[in-house]
Image (cartoon, rainbow, N blue to C red):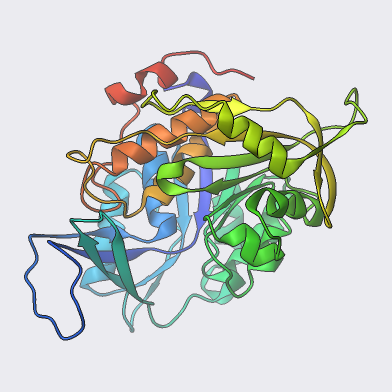
Length: 367
């Protein structure tokens, strides 16, 4: 583990749940009756997964969320505590039910289908006393939101801004209250469909330019593309940059052509800092990156559940460790690939001592 990250505190606010994971030979048709080939009960939820990942890598996460005082809620808290996540800031309802998710994993396609049941009663800002909020944020290097619990999350985010604590936002899909949160973010990690859905742009690169123009606080935005890796647009200062503009779609095409498809480990290709133009949208000064995913052999690919959460957990660590951007994207892809080699969102999450991370953890951070 990088010494820069020893005892580094981060705070996360968002979803936790119990996942009921059933693996099937093939996804059923309507009215079918089938048997599972394997079954596992495990903690889940975007925030719970991402902070578990960050904790295994060496950070000290504190989680703000809510469960009920039922069997599932107690199991959720226990599993997080065992993994080193501080749950002392979580709300526990004496009545109601804890969140849970049914997940069907298709052995043929390696895809997963999720059916989520939210907890009740839902978390409200009153569930987080001001004294607990201030204590949670005390000494925090970074705050992370998964877009859930938006009313409470906004209170946490506004206090983080007052304290100049950077914010990373997971923009998985359009959600109630997300616009208010994303305006306060310093970093955004998006699912593949989000940038175009949120901006209305015709292509992903145009959408990323649009996001940086709409959100002046954003330092970088990453869109994850599953087995196709990721794309990142990082904002840069204008000083010393050529006045010539580059079409962002054409720039992405040129970077794609530089990919070495024979390399199976994650790699990263980047442009120089330039003025990136999106037709009909505008121009931003920045740098474009393509990160490739690890090419996992079919015999080793078990389940993609939580791969995005693993990626974000690794990004949280990489920011705290001051990794260079190229190193950050390769690191996150490696962590996500490790997760995909086991059933469930957490079983495959690597620890900082895992051999697959040795080249990242035993080298000095780059600035």
